[in-house]
Amino acid sequence: MKELRYLEDVSTLVLDEEKCIGCTLCTEVCPQAVFEMRQGKACIVDFNACMECGACVNNCPSEAIAVSPGVG
Ligand code: SF4
Ligand code: SF4
Image (cartoon, protein in one colour):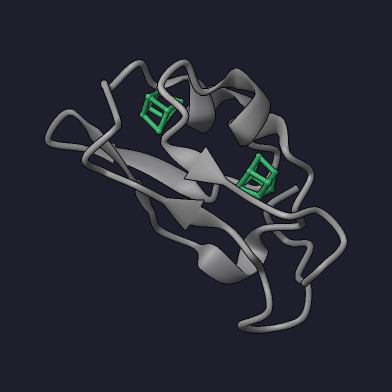
């Protein structure tokens, strides 16, 4: 689904890399390939692909990710 695009620069997605414990779950559940693992931490590699579905937030065990669905 990576080809689907949304409005630019309006996503409310926030990642706190300090809280990330490197579990990789966000890279697995995100349907848009927004995250990649780099040096043991998640990082946002395609911010504007985020459709604010909340899957990453709901599966992150360390509350490192926040998003407000429908706001962006
Ligand atoms: S909210 Fe959905 S689309 Fe956006 S980064 Fe999280 S899992 Fe991916
Ligand atoms: S789900 Fe949370 S803890 Fe796991 S890699 Fe992603 S940001 Fe880090």
